[in-house]
Image (tube, rainbow, N blue to C red; front, side, top):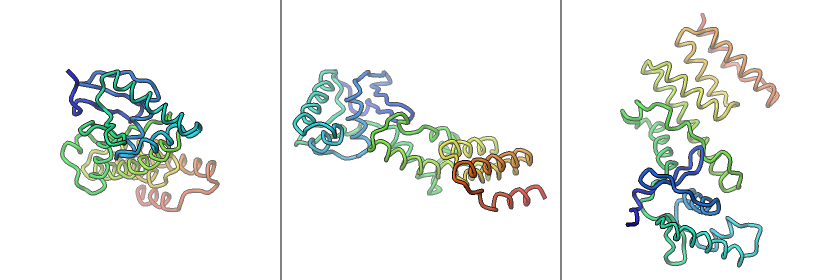
Length: 236
């Protein structure tokens, strides 16, 4: 019996995986690329658009043939994941995508509508990066957009957890934001504030020095004076 769409899950964070009822299904890379494109666009695409995006450097008829081959391969695997009706290609309704869930979670944190379950989970569900080893422009653009969303959310998580007295979890969230964007001064500031809240002035100063060194080496300017002001206020 073919699986229901709701039992099919696409994993795009950290690496591509397709699972059915928790069991991983191996599919060739061209099929992975098609499923990823459909996931990132979030709406059905004309076949010509999908083929042209995935195979930019070949003639239109060859790109169309490549798309047909990928669709045939997916059908032969018995994976009901792509809707091909009416001249379009799109994900079947009900297919779950981990990226969508992470985006919804990030927006809850940013809106201040996080749930008790979100608070309990902390920053862990937002530590994954979108397909870090994929270099196609259409994937890289979405990766940059998602990185910005999750870094803002991780900073919000750090702030909220610190306010709740969960300083250990808060600093992990701030460090995750920093790992995603090492040149982000606000993430350095969040780490420093949490170290100071813990009474770890020496750690706060070390973080300030790391930030100064990194900013000067990478962009040629030091961070703003607000970081020094934090240290002075927190160690006074």
